[in-house]
View 1 (cartoon, one colour):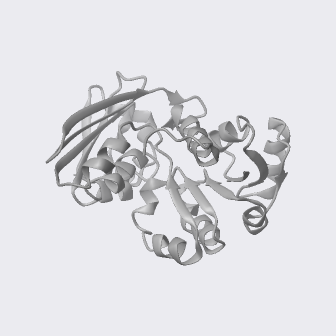
View 2: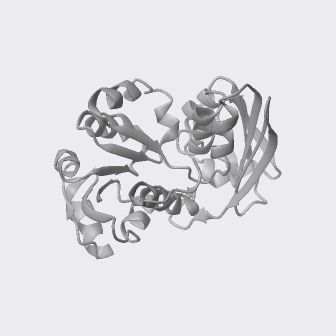
Amino acid sequence: MKIGIVGIGAIGAAVATQLTPPLELVAVSGRESHTTAAKCGALGLNASATDLATLISASDVVVDCAVAASFRGVAEASLAAGRVLVTVNAAPLLDHLDLVELARANGGRIVVATGALLALDAVAAAALGRIESVTMRNRKPPQSLAGAPYIVENGIDLAAIATATCVFRGTAREAAKGFPANVNVAAALSLAGAGPDRTMVEIWADPNLTRNVHEFDLVSDSVSFSVRTEGLPSPDNPKTSAIVPLSVLATLQRLASPLRIGT
């Protein structure tokens, strides 16, 4: 299976360096070609740094590890070409669900990697019945929220937060707009379950945390459960969890494997 990776930051680099047969890295694309080529060389990758169109042409699966702002362009081009798109960008997908029809029309597929959240299989199963409520709480060190549009627009001084503080309450759709780099887990949860307008989200800044903590409670007509995960922040990007690239790798392995565990 030929893999092309868009974005060679913390997540993309980790995925690129850990691919094993039958997964073959054939191309890498980034915002600046010379920087991408240098990064590929530094990582010892046996793949060419190229433009997006060439990458899509050479790949069976396009892995989107780029910034959220690039999601639409990467997804549209990949799906128009009938490719499988594996993405970590669940948050921007909420505003571009028309891409599902583009995928259907061209024989493509959108696969959202689970990332730092557990139990999406159970959430998707519960959604086949009636979900009464879903509430998620994201708890992160304050510095991991730096630069989020909601933080900037509301003038929240993260450095002044001395105790665990809820800085946002709202729907998953609202959270995705205000924290596009921080709530991919909440967006994925909403897409698997009750939808972005019925999934409630709280975002907490806690200076006592060294890990990203995700908790959610689900109540449905078939099951009720609570889930808590504690993910170590990526050493290269504290806004994401270290397990995210491993989740992408696991997703790719499932696509290529004759045996799949879970739905």
